[in-house]
Length: 100
Image (cartoon, rainbow, N blue to C red; front, side, top):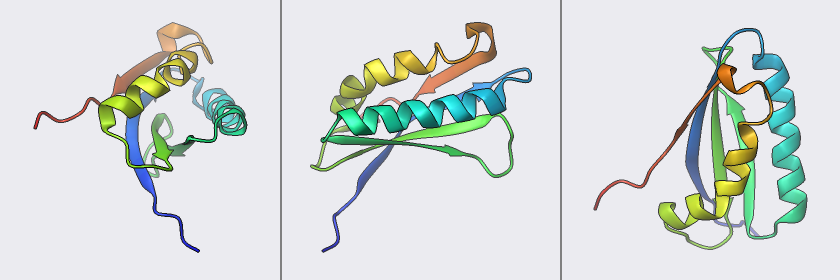
């Protein structure tokens, strides 16, 4: 049985300095920890192939969910991302819902 995937990009994170490798490992661990706690939303992190310091964060809901709702449910996860490396190294862009 194939589960329909409702994967949405929720954030783009840029890491400055030499913290990218450390952030990548910690962000992946954080996503796994949240995935073990949650049954409704699955988080994943993907490093962009052409960049060492840009990461895309996705949230996949088992049910169809508006981007706005998904972001609201993901706020705690996104806030925690900012604590993984010193804040001056992190630039996070939350992907806001497009105006209809």
